[in-house]
Length: 122
Image (cartoon, rainbow, N blue to C red; front, side):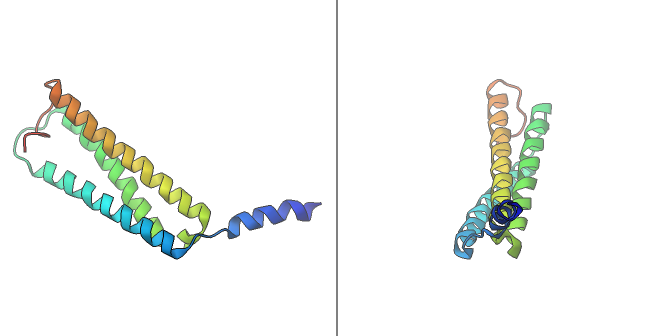
């Protein structure tokens, strides 16, 4: 009876994904991370004064970018071929993507309401 309880747990640990599938995910995540980094670096290089709404936006974008980079780094390890680790990395990436998106949306709406600083001037 205990043997039946142990076997499903062992099977779950042994589930793996194909390396080709993971490689595609690494490529897609790498492209999005590059875009996010480019957006943040362009924004930080704009002349002008920062407003409090800019700081909120950049904090969201930076946190989201950090999660995206962590996800990419995790996917580069061989252990990411385990389904559990792969799924965790993808979840981290999606959370990071949502945070970056929220930061950009917040900056756009702050600018539309006249609260924004330098975000959309470039």
